[in-house]
Image (cartoon, rainbow, N blue to C red; front, top):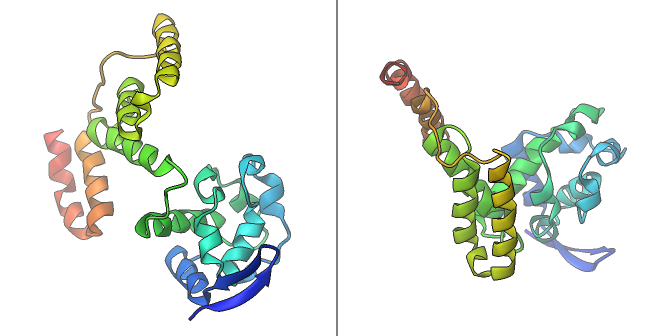
Length: 209
């Protein structure tokens, strides 16, 4: 059930079940937030947010789902856990941010940012090699994001890459880690949600590696 609220943005739809969903999935204690602003005052990337962390939490409490999921704050959060360290009530703000990103992806509310694409490309590299190979990551993201057609930016990145090669900051070919099977097992556990089955294969995969 949605209700209408009058906010600084005018009349908005509010969905109380949204706050319940976020608390249920994140196990965060949102009801403890009394807007002390400790999270926002300590956040190292708050200057780039459209809503400070304490404001975003209040918006979640009020069920302002549309404004929350369309915000840049959700995607720019660095998950550094400074807010969690400073929070006097141990709310679990980082878990809230993770949950909001999951909901936004599920509901395809990602048109305003390319960060989910970058995250997926980054994790794909981890899954294949167990580590990041910067050159492969850059090339894959450039193609996937469509930046291959931005000639000026492409040339700028190419010049930067050449300078990094000259200083031995880029490795030409990727290398896999020894425990790649364990890394892939972790990915399977998170995707299937079937940890018990994967634990049975854990020892065997270590032997194979």
